[in-house]
Length: 374
Image 1 (cartoon, rainbow, N blue to C red):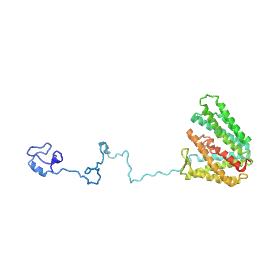
Image 2 (image 1 turned 135 degrees about the horizontal axis):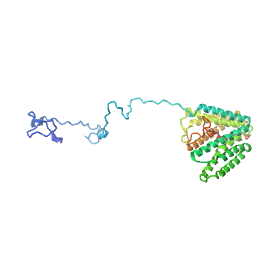
Image 3 (image 1 turned 180 degrees about the horizontal axis):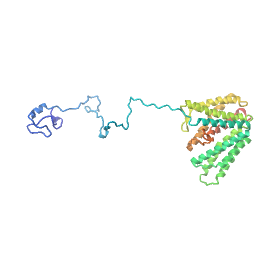
Image 4 (image 1 turned 60 degrees about the vertical axis):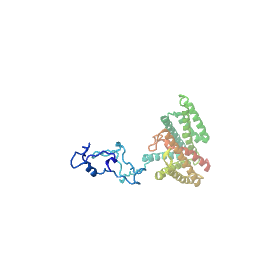
């Protein structure tokens, strides 16, 4: 095999000059190297090894697959001695750090929440069993404060100006009318309050009138009208015990949902509305409320039976959960966590009424069906 078969010029150091003179780029002339002898002793060019067929090759036989960087920019840059790589890759066999487990937290000041809850419970029970009229006053005050929180947040976050004065006066009158005149009185007071909202808002600019009066009518129904059913429970002979049953079942339902959901909660109940609520928590609310309902109807309510308490507890768990989700929906739309800051560890009054308000008409109706209006 001669050099012409490779198509490469003679390399320096392969052979010396021939009779025709020195070759450009060849070694210096010398007597020990002549052309004929150089052709016989010329070394074979170095040929890179080519893997056999079936190796790391392309489909064309004899063409080895290219590997490695194709461009200069792809070549790894040398790092100075002692330099730390910018993005070091973890060793495949190196143990990865395990994050320390985090303890679950309720997200609030538990001590303050318990203290405020005990204080509110003492005021409610004292007014409930001493003078009924005082408890009606407690309901009216809670309604007015709740309306103030709701209208203030609507104006701050959405620019909705629901008139507070007619809502506060009409809401307090609605609670008293429900206690004195029953359902008819509550509906009449509700209608008059809505009318007062319409007229009161006419004294301002027409811009935003529709959304303001709509929000006012919603607030009148959501807070004072639903709270009126608590006052109507109180009119029965065993009214204080009915109200106490209503409060106990709602609190027990919330407590069961929190306790079971915090310990065993895995599946989200309504992640878009309230990510903290779980299906396991709902099951805990149902179980706790049904047991408490059976005990309350059997021992606290005249002519009540345990199986009626089971149904009542089931209904309370459902209504309390829906009420909590409804309040969460409102707060998410407003972009806030709490409606107020009046109660340390709890938020505002509306944050405590969220489960109670929609549960009140449910308990009132079922007790009337089970044991009468009293």
